[in-house]
Length: 69
Image 1 (cartoon, rainbow, N blue to C red):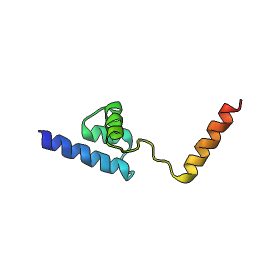
Image 2 (cartoon, rainbow, N blue to C red):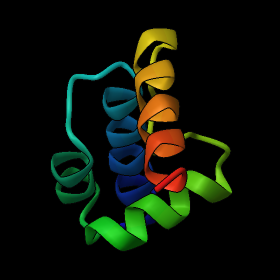
Image 3 (cartoon, one colour):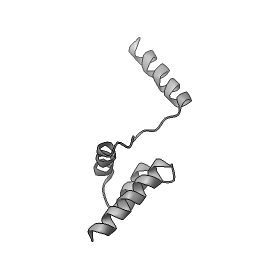
Image 4 (spheres, rainbow, N blue to C red):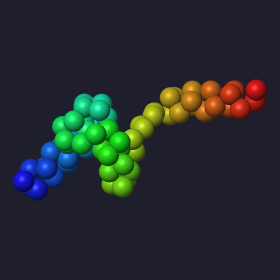
């Protein structure tokens, strides 16, 4: 039923946000595929990628290195 689907989705979102479930496992819990779940996360304002400050710096350095070649 609709309430159960919504509750499963909200639970999946929350568990994904706190790092208890991967994107794939959260999507599975919600009963969606990964792409659908990621799209809905975006519409809900939930970041699909959640990097801390150090991880962000590493990624930025890697991108800068790739663009200078």
